[in-house]
Image (cartoon, rainbow over all chains, first blue to last red; front, side):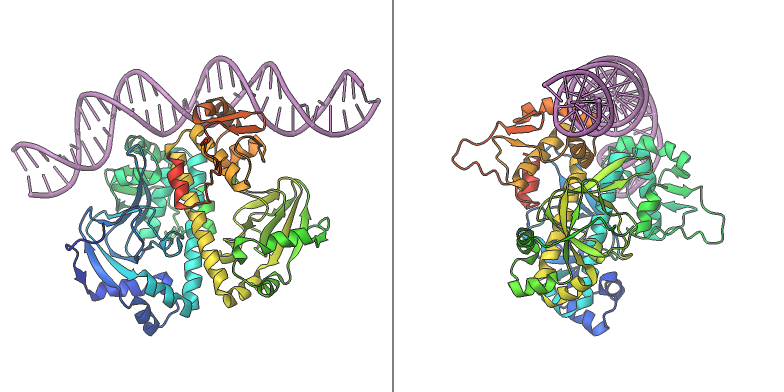
Length: 250
Length: 250
DNA sequence: CGGAAATTTGAGCAATTTCAACATGGGTGG
DNA sequence: CCACCCATGTTGAAATTGCTCAAATTTCCG
C-alpha cells in the first residue's frame, strides 16, 4: 500500500509542458497553472507497477505525461475488467476528487513505463474554488465520462463484438491522431479485449470479420479501407461529442 | 418539439416540499432555495407524454415531484434501451447542464401521470456560482452516476441475467424504501427489461431462477426470502456507495 | 536460439435472442 | 354483468453468439 521507494521524482520540461496543455487547464494563465501545480511532482512508474489500489485512500489527482495507464477491476471470480485506458495528457481519478468515502474504487497500473504527475488532492480542491473555469472543465469532463459509459452500456446490449471492436478501433485512431491509412495498435490485444468486456478469443475471432466493416487488421497493424476519398481524411470522432454517438451507429 | 398547450402549470404545496428536500439542495437555507427555484414551475405530464426529445436544446433542469419518468434511447434498429428511470425526488438532465452542444442526447417521457418541476437552466447555472454547496452536490451526484454506469457495464459483462435482475430488485426495494418482506413492483416488467438491457422473454425466464437467489416473484409481487432474522431488516443498499459495488458481487 | 508470453484456432457448451404461439388480465362498450 | 379486445407477459423451440477449455502458432526478448 502507498508508494514504494522505487519511484523517482522527475522534473522534465517536456513533460511539464504536456501537463500545462491539458484541456482541464484551458483558459488559465501560466501563473494560475503554477499555483494549481504546486506540490505536484512527476513520477516514473515501470511496467506493471501499481499506481493505486482499490480501497486505498485517494491522495492525488493524476495526469499522464508519458506512457499508458490501465484502470481496472478484479471481480470475485478472478476476472479482470478494464474500466479505462489513459494516455499522455489524460487526467485520471477525477471521480476520486468527489467520492464520498474518498477511497479508490478501482486499481490502476502502468501498462508500459509511464510518467505520471501527481497533484495532492487537498491542495487542488482548495485551488479549484478560486478558478471558476476549472470547475466548468471538470463538470464537462465528468459529463463526457457519463456519456461514454452510457454509450458503452448500450453497445454491450445492442452490438455484436465485431461492431464494438470496429467502433473502438476508429475511436483509438482518432484520439491518438493516428493515420487511418495505416497505424500500429497502441495496446496489446488482451488489453483491448479486457477494455471491451470480451474474451481474448472472441476478439481474435472478430478480427477477420472487421473487413466487412471497412477495417483490415494484420497483427498489430490496422488500416481503414473505407475512408472518404476527399482531400480531408480527418475522420475526427471527437471524444464523446454528440457525433460520437451518431457515428457509433453509422 | 417544445411543450404543447396540454401541460398545466401547477402549484401544489406538497410537491414544492419534495423539491425543497432533494439532496441537491441540502445545506441551503429556505431563502437560498427560493432563489434557486425562481422561474421554475411544476408541470403535469400525462402517461406517455414526451418531456424532451433527443437533439432538442436543453432548456430546463428537471425534478420529479410525482410519478415515474423514463429516459431512453432509440437505436437504429428500432430497439429501445432505457438509460434511467426516475422517481419522486430525482433530479434529471444534470448532464445537460454541462453538455458542450447543449442538446439532449436522450428522449424522456412520463411512464405514468407525472408531475415535474422545470427550472430554467440559464438562471440555475447563474445561481450555482453563488452557492458553493450546490456545486459540491452536483459533482458528487455526477460521480455517483459514473460509478453506477461503470457497475452496469461490469454487470453486463460478468453476470447472468438472473444475477442482474436480482441486484436490480434489491436496489429498487431499497431506493423506494419498500418492505422487503413483500412489495409490489413499481414498474412494468417490460420497462425493467429495457432498463437492464435484456429482452422481456429473458427477464420472464429469469424470474423462476430468482428463488435460488432468495427472491420470490409472483406477478407483480416481490418478496425477499433471505432476509436477516435480526430485528433490523433495514437492508439498505445506499445509492452507489462503495457498498453498492461490494453487495453487487456478494 | 530458447523459452515465455501472447495470440490464434478448434470444438463443444451455455446463455440469450428471435420468432411464434399461447395465456392473462384489466377495461370498455353493449 | 358479460363478451371481447388490446396490451402485457409467458412459454416453447430453433438459431446465434460468445464463452470455456485445450492445443497449436506466433511473437517477443534476453
